[in-house]
Length: 211
Image (cartoon, rainbow, N blue to C red; front, top):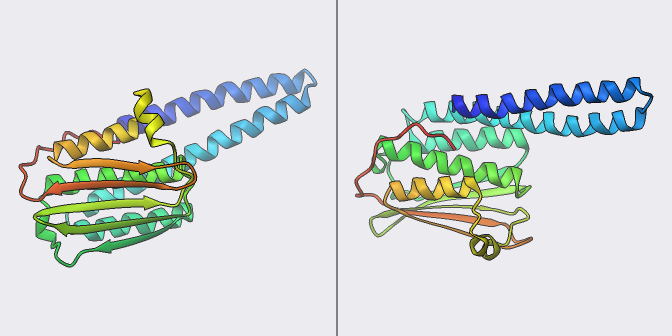
């Protein structure tokens, strides 16, 4: 997470410095309209950087809360997500899933997948609502994250062989847990991320990688 903050914010600050200097040069040269356009673009970049910073802080707080309860940590994350981005969230938890169902290593992996899916719903899907559910199914746990965003052509992405890095990270985390991961989406039809994990599967140690 520290490396991600350094890389993303470092790039934004470097870009901001360069663009401010360019806008100043345009203004001194009497090109007020061009300078204004440059600053408008810069404002958009800074706003998105601010949103990403809030997201990183929210992710850190949520991870720390997992020591007490996974579902409480997930609910805290969703509540903070709604407050920060004004995107409605709904959490449904099967009563058959007790807190003892998830070893510590699984909790963090699941939270990271949840965070990445909601980050995608905000940044790429421009969603207004995200529904999250956890259900027990024949000795396994099924997590589904569905948003009402703009969606994308899942077949086109698969055929092109170019997968969004966030999707690749989620899939890798699911595989580390011995689970199955699938994404269903279509233009203007939202996106649905589903993960099914056997609760008795051996789990690897968390490697500290952040999404």
